[in-house]
Amino acid sequence: MNVQATTTVVTELESDAMVAGIFTDGILGSNLADLNAAVGGAVTRLVERRDITGKAAEVVRVLSPSGLQAGELVIVGLGDRAAFGQAQALQAAGAAAKQLAGRPRNRIAYCLDGDWDDAVTSAAVCGAVTGCHGQDLYRSERKLHVFGEILWSTGSPQAIAEGVVLGECINLTRRLVNEPPSMMTPVRFAEEAAGLATTFGLDIDVWDERRLHDERCGALLSVARGSAHPPRLVTLRYQGAADDEPAIALVGKGVTFDSGGYSLKPTDAMKTMKCDMAGAATVLGALVAVARLSLPVNVHGYVGLVENMVSGDAYKLGDVLTSRRGKTIEVLNTDAEGRLVLADVLDVAVSQGAHRIIDLATLTGACVVALGTDVAGVMTNDQAWCDELIAAAQVCGEPVWQLPMFAEYAEQIKSDVADLKNIGDGRWGGAITAAKFLEQFVGDRPWVHVDIAGPSFAEKPKPWLDAGGTGCLLRTLLQLLRMRS
Ligand code: BES
Ligand code: MN
Ligand code: ZN
Image (cartoon, rainbow, N blue to C red; front, side, top):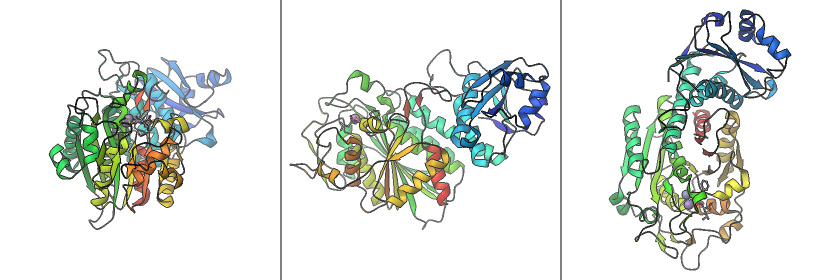
């Protein structure tokens, strides 16, 4: 998306719409003060009448303002000045964009006030780029129309460019999630990855079924067996630092559709299960972002792509699988498939020398029960590594919350017939028993598991973002990598 820095005086900017911001304290910043003067004090009158309150993501539109070269003036609420940060900037810019995208526009000018640091500017640009993109990939008449271009009157050109990259990569992740499941099969996902790898200079390795057999990925292959669409394991490598610098592995769950298998999901639970590859889509989006921003780090992405289906040859309850690591697993619920896929993918990452690991997975409904739909659960075998991720998330304003990993939870995944079983003893603590299962496959590597079952897919739209895939935590991952570089 074309976003240009502009130094033109705001009252002279030509645009279909101009976006300015105001905090709840009602004090006009210099851009808004200039605009207010140009429109004869209309903004101050709206503030006095309480038509404008500055409440977070409130959008007030002044149509056809005389005195401006703009079709309309949009005043967006920035919330409480003291609470302002990346998340608030993103949501305000996104809310304005989403409203304006209701019909086609050529040029939108953002003239937000405040002396923002680069990271906050980037977040706001990111919000504008994501806010005007919808999930309506297949509607003849779109509900949201992507802007022709955006002019940005505050912040450095680098901060603006970085925000565009983040926004576009989040939109990439969202699109992959939003594509219907019969379209976004494992093979198709791998093809998308290959195309992006070529465009952005990433090394890529795609393992097909045969290679997965040769590599003894028995757990992943068992999940895949019920599907007519063959599985893939995609490895992406970005070497931004010296080759002997340690590599960070990002591992993603890529179940392109989760029917539950023979432990079949009811319709209501199944209807959104195209989202079950959101972890993989986030890893791909993050790798593209790292490459486009040329971060000086080594990052490797691993995504396990399968479809969890029923068929005459699908894996069954009571089956015992042998994972790549050699541990045997008794299957007592075919709907606990994500941990089986990740068991093998994590082992590949470990055996290829990953020094530190983060996995992202729409792993459990239990995590959504625990934390709700907007907060990701994090679990770890290494507190310092987890603290880095939590710190990055805090900077970005993306909510995450840590769940404990007491040894007692692991008792539940012991099996009478195999080394492990793929579910706990009941549904209580299900997010953690799933993480304890994954922990068996990361060896001694510092590892953080991020359960994004809640926040990666929105059933209802937010004021700043359409419903569907959200691209959550992509900014956090980039922030974490930046903090390490
Ligand atoms: N993909 C689901 C988890 C999920 C639930 C993601 C809701 C997004 C929204 C996962 O494969 C699953 O089915 N988990 C089971 C585990 C259970 C059988 C132990 C669950 O959460 O019910
Ligand atoms: Mn499942
Ligand atoms: Zn699943």
